[in-house]
Length: 271
Image 1: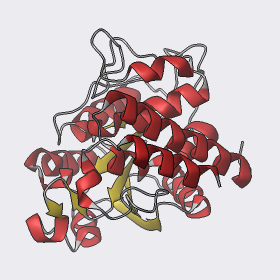
Image 2: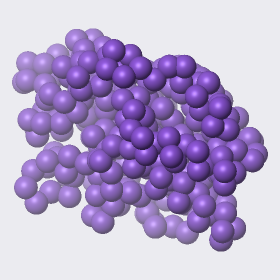
Image 3: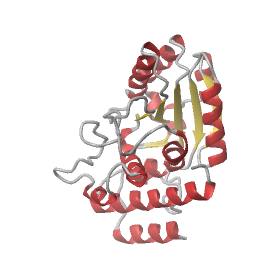
């Protein structure tokens, strides 16, 4: 499944779904969902060892969406991959729906960890990777962090732990779009020099364009052959990617599109 046109078509479907279901919910986080679509598409349609018909398959690869507010992107990807019918997504954030504003591992097939409280996902991912080491399992653990999220102290405790335990079966993506809920990351609490910080903690660091499949796939291959240390892929992304009037607009961090905006977005994504 490594055809780029195939991946691009899947990404287009996922973006349309994100826009539609957030509009129907009248609530959600479009900006940071749209920015991670290529990463999720590459993982679920090219890289990860998974089985939608057997979500609890032994030896499956794991993904932890630490930035849990990006749930519409994860749900739409899982549905596109066949973990559950797409029709159910329209109940996003509705009372009684399994598809709430943040992922729930108890209810949604394919969701490996309930997330939403920022800063916790890397610690959980460390635990999964350590478990694989202890029991000689071959699965890999992937994690998606937000750039504003890594202002959390727990991230850095976990960042110290992973190299200590030589978790070379752990690969982190940093969704680096430089926007968080209150504005520019660099203004609110700067994280640079981000590559040198992770390197100093003992990580293998790769910097890429987070919307370029060739760079994403190449980085994942490099991560897989790196032994003795975990890898972080710093992915430069665009918040709201794919919808012109949402791109790099902080207000679309957590605001649903209006009917007119939904229609404009779907027209753009259909081109």
